[in-house]
Image (tube, rainbow, N blue to C red):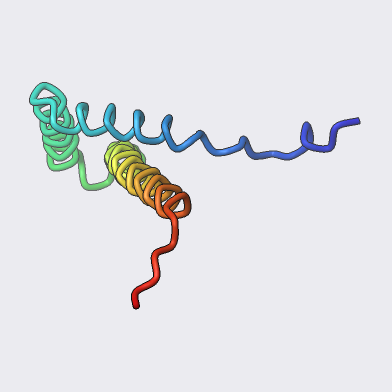
Length: 109
C-alpha cells in the first residue's frame, strides 16, 4: 500500500510549470478586456448594494460574498504571478550555483 495515496495535498508543480503559470497569470492580469470586466463586475455589485433595501440583509450579504469572491480571484492571480517570479529567480539561482560548482577553484598568490 502506497501511503502517498492518502496524503491530502498534491505535490507542488515544478519550477518550470510555476514560471509558466506566472506568465499566464501576468498576461491575464494585464489584459485590457479582463481589467474592464473586473471593473464592470465590481461596479455592478456596488450599484446593486447601494440600491438594495436597508432591511434586505440576505441580499446585501450575498453581494458582499460576491465581492469577496471577486477579490479572492484577483488575489489568486496575483499569487500565481508572484510564485512565477520567485520560481524564475530560483531557477536562475540554481543555474548560477551549478555553474560555480563546476568552475575550478583558483587561488590567488
